[in-house]
View 1 (cartoon, helix red, strand yellow):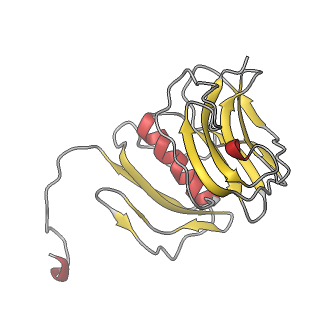
View 2: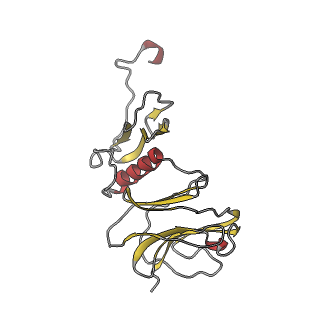
Length: 212
C-alpha cells in the first residue's frame, strides 16, 4: 500500500507524461523512502532508503546540467540516477504531505519539521552545511560528514562555510556572525558556528580603535 508523499512538485510541461508530479519524495509501496525525478519521456527511476520510525534528514540533488539525481539520508549517499533530462516548464505547485498532481491523494501520515526547495543545484559543500544545520537544529545524528560537534550547547542559528571536492561555500551569515569571501579554504575545510540563545551584550574589549 502506498503510504504517502512527503514532498513533490508539478509543472504544466517538461516530460511527455507525468509533468504534474515531475519530482517527489515519498514512502513507496514497499515501505521505503523513495525519491525520483522524471526524464523527458516521463520515466521515473527511484532511489530508495530504508524507512523506520526515527527522524531523518533526506536530501535530493538534481543537477540539470549533467542530468544527474542523487539522494542522501542523514548525509550518506543512497544512490545516483543519470539521464534525468526533463525540462520543467510552467511551475504549478509544491506540495507537502500529499500528491502534487491534480488529485489530492497519497496523504502522508507523519511529521515534517522543515522542507527546503532551492532554485539552484547545491554543491557538495553547500549540501553538507545544510544537513549539519538541520542536524544541529533538530538533534538528528548524521551518518555522513558531521562537521559540527557542539549541538548540545550551541544549536541555534547554525551557519557555515567549507570546501569539498573543489566545491566551495565561502560566505554565510548566522544571526550574530557573518563570514564573507573566505579565500584560504582547502579540500575538507569547514567552519561552522551557532549560539546558545543566551542574551548578548556589546563589548569593545580588545577591539581595534577603528571598530570600537
